[in-house]
Amino acid sequence: MTPRAESLGNGFRARATPFARGRRLRSTPALRRLTAQTRLSPADLVLPVFVKQGIDEPVPIRSMPGVVQHTTDSLRKAAHEAAEAGIGGLILFGIPSEKDAVGSQADAADGIVNVALQQLSADLGDELVLMADLCLCEYTDHGHCGLVTPARGGVRGQGGELVVDNDPTLDRYAAVAIAQAQAGAHVIAPSGMMDGQVAAIRRALDGAGHTETPILAYAAKYASGFYGPFREAAEGAPRFGDRSTYQMDPPNADEALREVAQDLAEGADAVMVKPALPYLDIVSRVADAVDVPVSAYQVSGEYAMLEAAAANGWVDRQRAVLETLTAIRRAGAGTVLTYWAVEAAHWLR
Ligand SMILES: [Zn+2]
Image 1 (cartoon, rainbow, N blue to C red):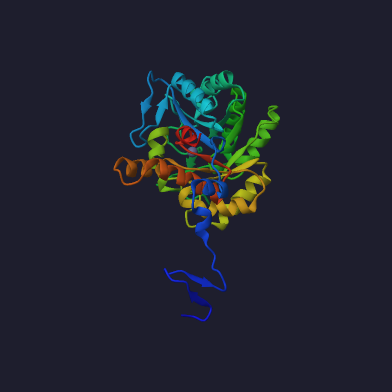
Image 2 (cartoon, rainbow, N blue to C red):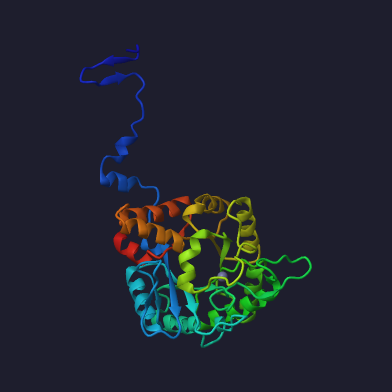
């Protein structure tokens, strides 16, 4: 026995210097609730939704149990339910019947995503924030996020002879941004990872009178293996090569800060990190570095992985889902894009 402790029997010891007892504040649910540092509320959550042209019934996505490709009607119903659940917003992805080299349906006034935006903005007004994902990969026949061109001097090809051509793509993004804002999108969210995309979109929106439409930039979007199920959902898998010449390389962290700084300099109002769970360090560093809202996108592979484990009875589904959402918020994201948004909102209420 040390000279500083004296035996009181029953194993208790009085110490001259008491040690900290972290367990005191964990002892009841009420104390844990009171002292929770990170809170999750329905308003933090945004639901990604897919709307497909030319279908009569919602089509289940095999690799994402519980997620569907919507008809415009089923989307309207889902949007109404999302508003009732009190979530923060929706982000829309469109799947056209016809695809071509330049992704014409992305900015066609009667293109599926623009029709859906018109309907939802008429149905819901400001009840939910309507975000439009801005990219070309769901609309192009080659499945890349930009226009492709034969490789030429200085531009390295992937998968042979075609490359994604940055600067001409910006003109397409500008046109799509205007069409989406016109259709009723409250926020434009460019996800293509072309250099200069935020500047091009800001200039286009301002020129068309949409000076008040914010841009949420997918600023740090990684070339991730966790996008697998999304390719089925959005039918946008590249026909050749992959996206690693424009999306970020997973080993890089400092580069994310540079991408974020660049997007803010170009006029982004808010920034996103994607995926979320495998990149919590990036979420944390970005949140520390900037003074604008930070979002993180919990992607299809994160969803599928946990759903599969839960379906096998290997994890407690609700508990694990809420733990991942809390972790993403704790890392510093104010907003989480998640396929569990509406269900989690019901759990949280
Ligand atoms: Zn894309």
